[in-house]
Image (cartoon, rainbow, N blue to C red):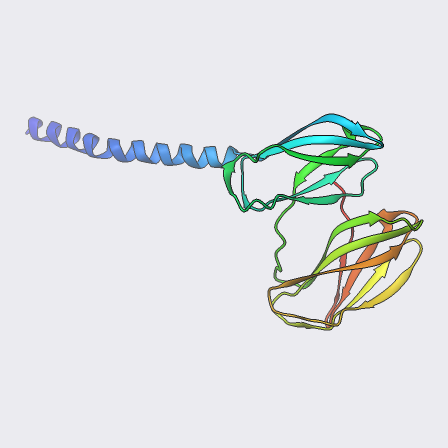
Length: 211
């Protein structure tokens, strides 16, 4: 009788050990995936006038044609798009070279730009705010995103420390889609530029983010 019990215990141990091993491996893989964090490294390789020549690369992310937002103490933030058609599945990009305006090169920051999603509510996404040759005038590129309702000729309220205006977008924006537009905005301080999407039920505000 004791031999039968001992044999049964050994059988259970032998049967459960592989599953325990697989479970541990799965747990380790999930932990490794969770711990994986995008890393972006860059270095200054030279200067041209007031601009620094930057060489940078990104690792540990999954995207096709990734976009990167570059900020500095003299740059309002612009988008650099890597349009090589490659699918980066937790791999590294090749070295990319850009020129960034900066008083102090140490102020330069590079981040992976999140993919724009229409979401569950209508919204405006400010993509870039760029100075122009006209003093206190900025070119703003933004996206209007519809949610579960079609936006027909939406109106956008634009505000800054210098101006207030209504912008009529003559367009039909389908459910779950976004459209890109641009507008010139007068402002002494570009950080005061705000957009508000006027809808039937409520307004949706969007303010520039530089970090």
